[in-house]
Amino acid sequence: MSSLLSLRNVWVEYGDKVIIENLSLDIEEGSFVSVVGPSGAGKSSFLRLILGQEGPSRGKILLDGTPLPPECGPDRGVVFQRYSTFPHLTALRNVMFGHECDGAPFSARLFGSAKRKAREEAAEMLSAVGLGANLDSYPAEMSGGMQQRLAIAQALIKRPRILLLDEPLGALDPGIRADMHELISRLWRDYALTIVMVTHDIREAFTLGTRVLTLDKRRHDPQAPHRYGATVVYDLPLDKENAQVTYHAERITIDEIRNN
Ligand SMILES: Nc1ncnc2c1ncn2[C@@H]1O[C@H](COP(=O)(O)OP(=O)(O)OP(=O)(O)O)[C@@H](O)[C@H]1O
Image (spheres, rainbow, N blue to C red):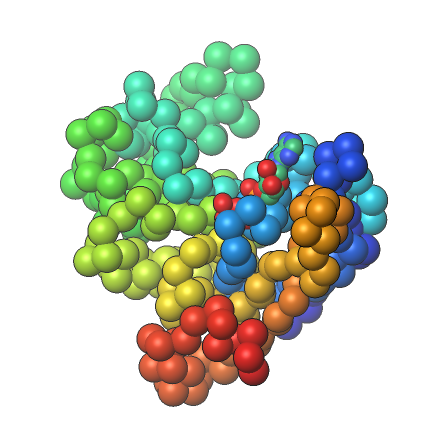
């Protein structure tokens, strides 16, 4: 595997508030990186950096060895915990929207064969996420799990090189999460994706990831909580061939990682 994304001495600072501190990291093509850490550690900020929603205050980020374009492009797709889809569009139109924006940036409307092709691809993607029977449903008519399936289809239609997941299953019931784990694993394999997923669920991090990163502060100043930022304090590659790792993950906690 080769390095798809590299962060070199990256800092995120807001005024004198340090959020991410001197982060250096390589993410291999085809890997599934789970990111865990305490609330407020900077996990979403880390995803926003990769997405291009904000730039580092210092350091550089390279995609395939070249500086990451400052704006979010089709090479990166994202799914948030909620509200990733357009409520006024059907499932099919939600997924077609990416192609429509590219093909007709001003009107977001395609015609003729371009429209037919976009429709076929969107329907195919919706089938891949298990929504083949819901092409004409609106997000409000769908369950939480179905809405997240739709958000994933919408993110994947542009065939991104990196898929960013920010607590994508955080609002779902545990039973639905298990189905979603199966779906995300299958899409990761079938579409040869590189995935970076933020989660608060340590079991999910170990079940899905090929690597688990823990973001946290190495130093704390009780008088000035934002004096120091977070960095990668644990970086655990997982041997997915070894089923035992998955079983152990059932019981593992952040404290157990810290103590190892
Ligand atoms: N635009 C901003 N201006 C100032 N501070 C910000 C800004 N965006 C984020 N922060 C701060 O950065 C810190 C990290 O926020 P972030 O959302 O990345 O953490 P997180 O690890 O994802 O948290 P959680 O697990 O609770 O979602 C927080 O203290 C937050 O208040």
